[in-house]
Length: 224
Ligand SMILES: C[S@@+](CC[C@H](N)C(=O)[O-])C[C@H]1O[C@@H](n2cnc3c(N)ncnc32)[C@H](O)[C@@H]1O
Image 1 (cartoon, rainbow, N blue to C red):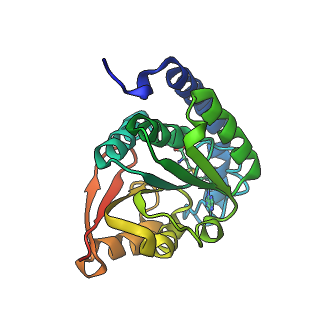
Image 2 (cartoon, protein in one colour; image 1 turned 120 degrees about the vertical axis):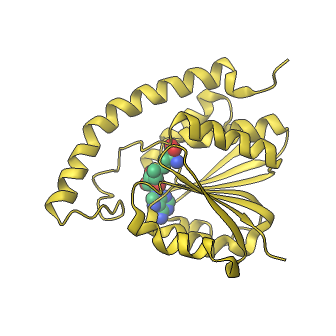
Image 3 (spheres, protein in one colour; image 1 turned 90 degrees about the vertical axis):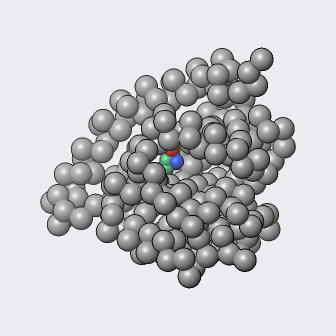
C-alpha cells in the first residue's frame, strides 16, 4: 500500500482545482504587473508591485511541489516553516508530507488577509488543515518569537526579504536543517545578497543550486 496522501482524492482534486484557477487568474494579473514594471524602469521587484500582485497565486510548479513533499518526508521534519503561503498550493504539499510522517506541523506566513482566509479553506478542502498554522502579517514580525526548532524552511515570499527572514529564524534552525529558496531564475539581483550569504561556508551552510522549476537554492545548516 502507498501511504502517500499526495495521491488521495482530497489532495488531488484540490491541487488540480488550484492549478486551473491559478493559471487563469495569474494570466490576467501578471501581465499588468509586468507592464507596470516596464514603465517604471524595468527591474522586477515584487515588493514594489505587491499591490498589483495582491490576488496572484504565483504558485510553485508541480515538480517543485513534489520535491518539497519528498524533502519533508525524507528529513522526517517535525516543524516546517514557510515564508509566503499565497493560496496554500505549496503549503498543501508540505502539510501532506507532515501528515504522512504522522506527527509535526507546518507554520506558514502570509501578509494578505484575503489570501490567509482562502488558503485556510484550501487546506481544509485538501484535508490537511489540522497540521497547519498560518501566521497573518509581515513574516518579519510573525516569525520573530518562534520557539520551535525548524527542520525545513521554505522561502517563497518577496525576494529581498529572504536574507532578513533567514537571519531572523537562524537561531531556531535545527542542526542539519534544510533551507530551500525559490525563484533564483526570476529576480537574481534581489536574491544576490541571500545567495552570497548561504554560499559562503563561513556562514555555516552547505549550499547548492537545483535546476528545478524557477530554480531553487538548497542549503543545509552545517554549523558545528
Ligand atoms: C510567490 S507567492 C507564494 C506562493 C506559494 N508559496 C505557493 O507556491 O503557492 C509569495 C507570497 O508571499 C507573500 N509575502 C510577501 N512578503 C511577505 C511578508 N513580508 N510576510 C508575509 N507574506 C509575504 C505575498 O503576499 C505572496 O502571497
